[in-house]
Length: 254
Image 1 (cartoon, rainbow, N blue to C red):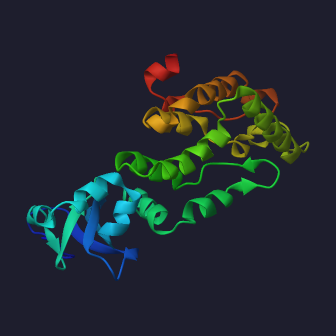
Image 2 (image 1 turned 90 degrees about the vertical axis):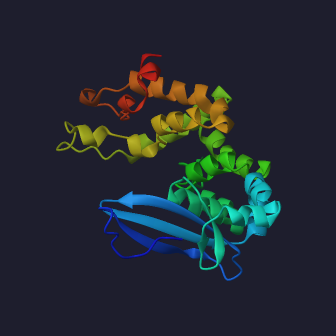
């Protein structure tokens, strides 16, 4: 590939090549790469991986690499003697998706880290949205998509009674955690219980763009509306901060 870690006199961006620490595998036979800009630097992140392993985690990649390799290699630039393929995705999302493919216990482990013994799942693992975006885009096996979407469905159950029961437990815990003193009683921050709940605005915006999450939209929308209805930081009563300006204008009106 025509990239290097020296300044390119024809552009204001400095190009830097960075190999993934985890996914520069000894058995690599293809190089995936992403490009992202940071200030005046254009970073190429390289993932040296195995076609056959990628094929197990993506129908799209399996079809891409499963055909006559002369065709794929003839249209690919080369990097260290291997064909390359660019992914137009965030490097963090690609890294997370590759973890899900290469390490069978990754999804379970990251999910368990976000669980509470009493309540269960408290929030979506940070890497799950990116994994799901690529899982849909690259046509991952149904069990991968199901493993990720089940986490969202645990937070935003399609059964309203189940969701309300869970919200009741979260609210009780939030109340128990309040530490109101005579000096803090009049302070807005003392009554803010937002941290005890997942972010429904983020979940709504994410679900709108991912068909596998469409079924949680009614519950998420209800959560936003319900939380907004009780939002009054000046009342001396526990409240959640719900920033609806992060929603599209039409969604705010609805």
